[in-house]
Image 1 (cartoon, one colour):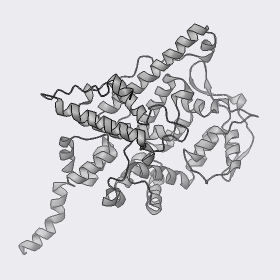
Image 2 (image 1 turned 90 degrees about the horizontal axis):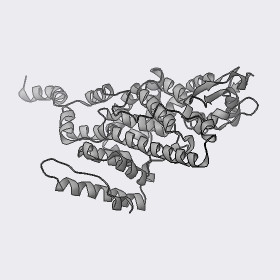
Image 3 (image 1 turned 45 degrees about the vertical axis):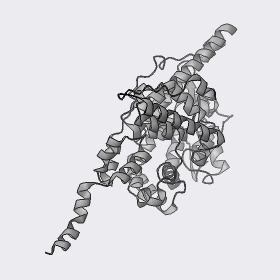
Image 4 (image 1 turned 180 degrees about the horizontal axis):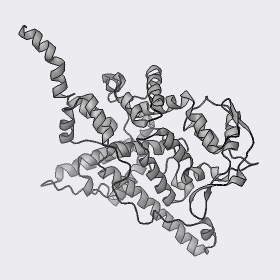
Amino acid sequence: MPLLLACWLLMPALALATGAGRADALHFLQRTGLGAGDSQIDEWARLTRGEMIERALAGAATVARTPPPAWVGEWTAPRQVRDLGEAERKLFVREQARKGAELKAWWARELLNTPAPLTERMTLFWHNHFTSSLQKVRSPSLMYRQNALLRAHALGSFRELLRAASRDPAMLLYLDAASNRRGRPNENFAREVMELFTLGEGRYSEADIREAARALTGWSVDLDTGDFLWRAFAHDPGEKTILGRRGNFKGEDVIDLLLLQPATAEFIVAKLWKEFVSPAPQAGEVGRIAQVFRGADYDIRAALRALWSSEDFWAAQNRAVLVKSPVELVIGTLRRASPQQVEAQSVAMLLRRLGQDLFAPPNVRGWPGGEAWINSGTLLARRQFLERVARDDRGRQGGDLSLTLLDPAYQLK
């Protein structure tokens, strides 16, 4: 066999053995992680694209490594607060604000130090999908519980995630579902579970919302414990017609009916596309990956594997087209430096200044993302942050990074 022909035949095997290369590794780690250093990029560059995907998925976790604040298991019943005197009530409010700040710092610390960056990235993705906020829920403990729930299901079954998130006390309080009862159905949760969590706009009717709200009556929160509570006496037992089907539906049935709709898989895949590929989902590819997603019974890993294996994910025209969120920018930069030397509360404050206040998305639609991250104020703040890190990095000696991130004067700018 001529030498030239032999080399040509061996080229695919040699490419496989040498890996995808540094450019692909950098692209993959930036899109699916929270920053990567040179040594990690070099290591992943020796992998094929498929091996990168499988390693990332295999490294997922279900719990945070950072120990949570000691108070996360506590719950104060609203009636206890009502019985407080004025001075005690003000003290309670201040204490809740302190806990809220501590909770934000806790998650910032986990983002900085996690050994499973994909898990935290997906936890943040679902936090922005199943949106709720400290401002309305007013319970750092419930918001911590929700965060743990999102992490536990972050790369598992969307079916189970949807079921769990829909019954989550923080979610029920945020969307006023706890007051949804027979004869006085509150439509907020029914509307958002269709529009924002599953089907997307234009794929349901107002009648569907009204009927779903009736089916969801009885789902509530036990104000003595902060747990989910089924109130049978508050449920409307009558027949309902939802998305063309009729029956004596309850809340669980609403979730199952939504999962039967092909539009649900398409809606989720389109959001994942915007997160990992480009701002403009390709309808044909979204439909193909959605079929894989449904065929795998809503396994999130299956959807991500199909998405990351697509030509569009690796295409040159889709590289460097996504605006980094504040978390991606700040956490990714600091993880490349020395996250152990960074004060987590300062990180949380900076994220808030840049427009991504952890546990506090602006509204039920979450952070809009994309170009919305950039305006005259946040652009200047991004530049100041990067310059500050660069100055500190240049000034360190012996590998000792003394980065405090933001001094008080800088925070007040």
